[in-house]
Length: 319
Image (cartoon, rainbow, N blue to C red):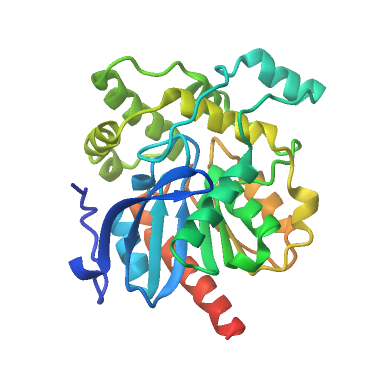
């Protein structure tokens, strides 16, 4: 099942022979579910999704359009989400813990940290026989991609960090509405989940996107059918908060880096993207006017075009 964006697929659409259905592989001690679009000999490009988001939040057509630009596109479920391994342990994050972290710098306890999720990414690359790849991460996925670049620089051909941040505590926090959404108790039924899904993405998009809202019920159904793991989302959030700031370490990054961020992002504020770009020497910054904390179809041409230019440019320089 897929949801068609209704957008043109470009002059070189990906056909069935270059789209491999979802598979599961053992990597870094867990099972990771992944899916590949594009030719085996194309430039490998890994898409890393954000907090509580399954790999299908990288829309099928988004992946196909990247593959049509000459990439072997690999999307996957992070640990604790979708069809990848669900872990155990940890308690639901409390507002008191957040206050202690923000004002007293008391660390949040976590079952695992972003470095462990970075090792998952590298483990998946090992399992697929990929020595190095272009990394594109959104939100928490951008943090994971940054951590891979910092800890395993030889594995990264280029880095694209989308609507993400450095972990710098000086970056403004989410808006009150976005923070409340993040801390809301999990839905108790399918109907409640579908409703909440639409409400959540309306907040995150931070604008009027009727073409997206029309697709939200189908997207929610697809996410629900693949399975929910509210406790896992809590563990992922703890991983982000327990991992601290990467800002100082990012000063040493030599990997070609592109930062993409929306000007009205309510969850990871625009200052987060700017801080990322300022922290990496030579990083390029693309601020997209009117984009929130989401990847609406109307912005795909600009986003995909920027990723294409950046990754292929890095590949050409390395050749």
